[in-house]
Image (cartoon, rainbow, N blue to C red; front, side, top):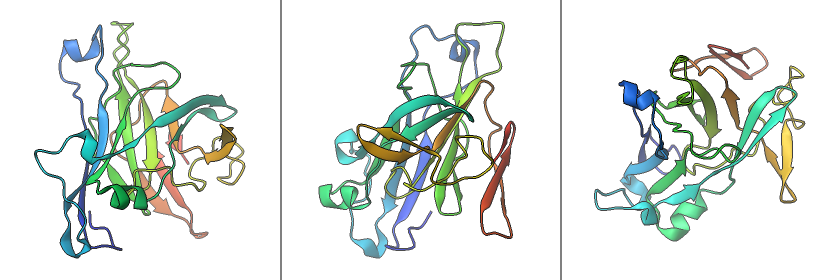
Length: 212
């Protein structure tokens, strides 16, 4: 994906797999990660991701809250700016998939990351390792700014279930107001979304168990 403001080319992906019995029944699940990397700097002149890079060359983003709301179970990820990366000379960002409520659950990304209406959207998969007879995985949706990896800091999900995506879909954490930008499901989403732009200019996402 090309950053329209800088001309740099980015790639987005997550780690993890869901192919074998051992993937479902992990006793000590590893923490998997979502990445956004500047693959080609282009005219931007910013740092490019290299094979020798480590996390020290990337900006960390986090899932900082997971709360029950009237609309379901919603998440908040950390805020930030694009300048966080450029000031530090970072070649991208990363976000560990660890629930602030439940800890390490083996959450992973086996689906394609999508760029929809200027936002980066991915569906994760959470194996139900405690119940080998129930192999339908749980999961979550995460929505961030693509080129900073940060919370979009604007309404993106109807967390209070009132049928509107607005300024009420927020939560205060540490004295700061955040917009919910993730949603968790007991049964995970289909791999990708379909998107429709309505006459009002809003974008609706369609997928298994979701119509936002």
